[in-house]
Image 1 (cartoon, one colour):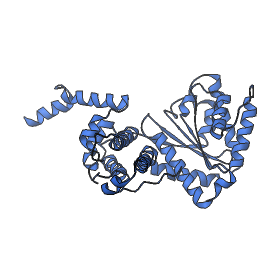
Image 2 (cartoon, one colour; image 1 turned 90 degrees about the vertical axis):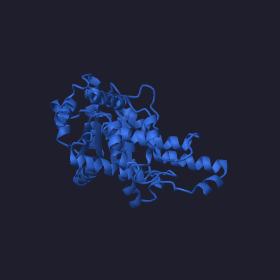
Image 3 (cartoon, helix red, strand yellow; image 1 turned 180 degrees about the vertical axis):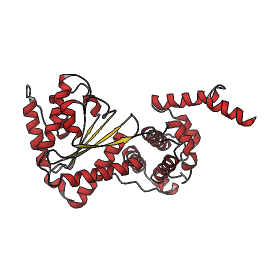
Image 4 (tube, helix red, strand yellow; image 1 turned 60 degrees about the vertical axis):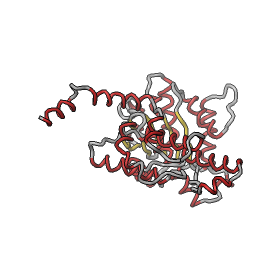
Length: 338
């Protein structure tokens, strides 16, 4: 869970490494880039505060524990925030109980809701997390009982359930899955974090089942950054500057990426998920590509990378609007010059 930033070494020290040592060093840096850098967004800071409040509320509760929902469109950083919360709780737990692994403790658990989930399938995802063997023909009740026993024995403090919108369908199995999750709150001394798309607008919080969940969970609505908002513009630049300081690249100069903050917004449409993929993917490229002689993020390198379909489509639409002489923006520009 804990990933330490590798030291940045000089070219001379890098060249003096054996091939094996250099390969190991590069791999450490790629692993760190893939999952060790946390983009400290305002949403993440709010999520930490809200999660702390949930933990405080749950101290004396025996059932119906309070939880947190991370709700928003795709690529706004919900999963990134959820995993950052896991890392935060894990590190806090590790400081309090440094030898917890000797006692088979598992402070945080992460599962993704399968599409078309049933209660049994959902319990299997928990069982898979712990490596529990599912017996042929074993009932959902039996699997659930073993999962609950395992979670209690592991002293789990935080359970993150991602892709919760997969329970928004009308299938009977989805309703059963919601009931299974709701009942877990009563059987476990854990705090839950749910993450998904359109959770407050869908069927998950509707009806008697949903009302019980909505009475226990607070919601953090996550949105894309908007450069027209001065606060968002400042936060966007700060996120980029923070990320840049964490880059384990040997030649990158601080200040390069903040200077390209508007360009990075254009490339990603203000999506934290797309921004993370663009920057980490480009950084890894400088490490593994033998044709790149300097480990630094340049405009040319960033331009050479393709992003997710949503980000590329949004950029294409924005570019077309700039070229359209009949667009509102261009008409206003023309009137201003007259």
